[in-house]
Image 1: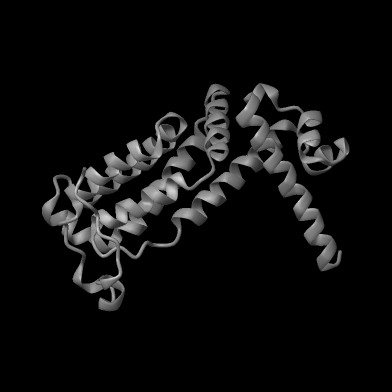
Image 2: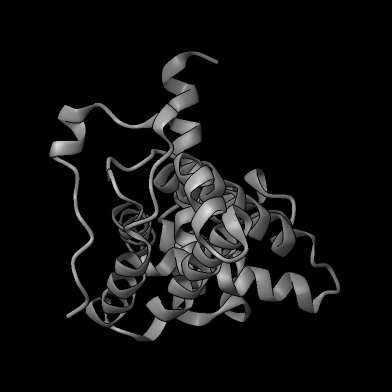
Length: 214
């Protein structure tokens, strides 16, 4: 297969996955049929069966797609010098994910748990927790010195805030959510960054600062 053919086939698979996300967001998992997915994707019905052996395989691909998007969104550290600004950056990356992606992932995780398996949900939570820990690493020593429960408690707090933001994004307006994050940022901004990983002063000068809660 030449490069152009490979690109086209990958585009078809991605189109089917994105169409499935739209169907889930509009109709729930019960509304996901191969015919409806093909109609939304604008592809022949047979393309769904060609790419995905079953509905479960299609849902697994959707989950992997959303997880990859989450990884990409949270995978690049923010430039904030203080911890409060870094927490605000994490919040912004979370709500920038399309609402349809949030809804699709929620439906798939719930479906997995109802079928008696928590592996997907556990893996999803652990991945987000690991990303939060990585992005908060520059404040490990400061958190251990100043916060009850230390760095581990900080990671848990930010991890659960990210998960809560996912759910809050379903119904609460962005500014309401942002107000809570501003408060959290104000409470955390005085935790010192580890000297060994302090940012370049030129970068720090342009870094966002967590505002006082309104």
